[in-house]
Image (cartoon, rainbow, N blue to C red):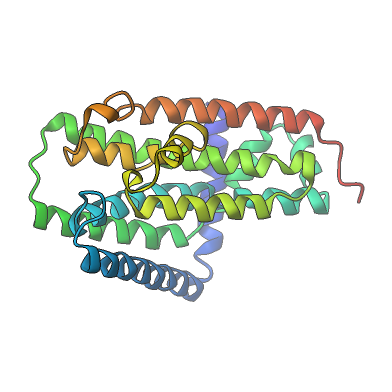
Length: 264
């Protein structure tokens, strides 16, 4: 509980710091909106030329994208700066995190808050509202609850993947390039349904780098696209999030114990 209280205090300081630069905040949000408009345009061009992608039409794909934006916004706002760990280790500033009576991880994720995530959140909300008006799906309380849980677990899966990637710099000193590759791969996978790719690729994004659980499998349930082949995976997103966070925490703990300074 003490770590949670301290994290809240760190976030308050970070928010106050960001609000000193209102123009930078607005430019960042607008740039995110433009980038997402370009991504959506590319998806629209594909569907216009092929009508559907693996039985997913334009509104299904917009739902898939909006779902991811909601997950990504939570990840981006609160932990998108995990890649800063590399610079902290290279500069030797991570040493200060180890001598304070606070969890080094709480200090790392609490040191900043990313305004670009607000743009992703806006895109996700607007996209979801638009899809809701067009598809008019009628969800019961359980589906709405499942939707809320999976938005959170999708964000946590992204946190875990990037937490693992950032922790690699305890061994390699530099890990930002590997994190960038994983980020680009994740972005690609969240824009399109996994079932349009080959069988071995589907296995990879389900069992090895489980990005399919961020938005694809939950969307299969929410849009009633379930098949017998999917029945063993479609409800696993919360479990995958817990498993990935456990792995990430283990890698982080091993890395912190191994850390001996950058020699600066």
